[in-house]
Length: 387
Ligand code: LLP
Image (cartoon, rainbow, N blue to C red; front, side, top):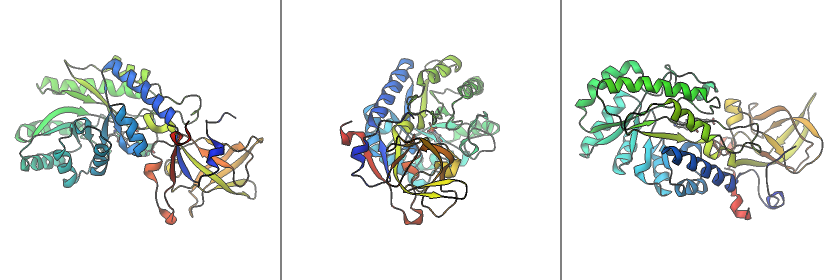
């Protein structure tokens, strides 16, 4: 069984569960992404929601990426990490007044606006400060993608974005909003998308939408296509770095930019997903009627994705080379849904073995909860061990 590269001996001194970030994987991923983006002159905003651990944000800042934030808290974190506010975009359907004010005070690059009422509030708050707010309209492109229904966002009946049918009204309103400057169009069709045809569909749709604005003589300086590029949860050891080259090629081939328009991306999972693992110890092997349960000291409070989205995370026993056996791998939380996977083959395991849940760098640590009065998992990085 092929396994990831983990300092098992060093782990023995540590309390489990903990998140382990392989900084080499992160740095290699960032290097490839940066080279590919620079080749096309594309701008990348890291979607902070995927992981706002300070170790990670340090690398993001060093790579000179911008940030995609969805709350005042995330804006504060991005700025604290040294990311220039002129590279921050702020999205979200429910921006509170204090969050809008914070973004205005820092003169962030752009608000991604999700509704007409929000546009009016931003205009009002910007007027009170006697400044202009730069905004992009988040338009719902109604592109179908093949991913889990909890994480699709680009369809009409979604709470996100402005529907095409509201555009006429919005265009009439815009000249009246004196403290708003329209600079961009924003799109996001969902997350964990591995079929690049979905992005081709988005690009083609954007070309049509661009025509709407162009024909009305409305100048748009940038197009933001959001994030969503998926990672290979099945093969974190073989394919640790997503195919950014093909992903960007889809846009450069199919998206028609007008005059000097800039193309922006908001990538989260594809940057940080593969560098993180949740490391736990086996507490008990429990013989059921017809199956064996492997009970870990990590549970859904530490990594909620399997319980919440039926998401798959590869599981490896890094302490055992025994023949594989099938287990239901579960956590200690008082919920049946606290199951990482059923009938899964892992090297025969015993109490105390280290079990790693792979590809947990995105939407892992940031979604930790304290249900059952659980404490947050510790954090360790490969840098600590000189790896
Ligand atoms: N831009 C917008 C407007 C978004 O809503 C998202 C993610 C992103 C960018 C970044 O998408 P990414 O490149 O990471 O796919 N918790 C879920 C994923 C939720 C994604 C929410 N939006 C999960 O664990 O799969």
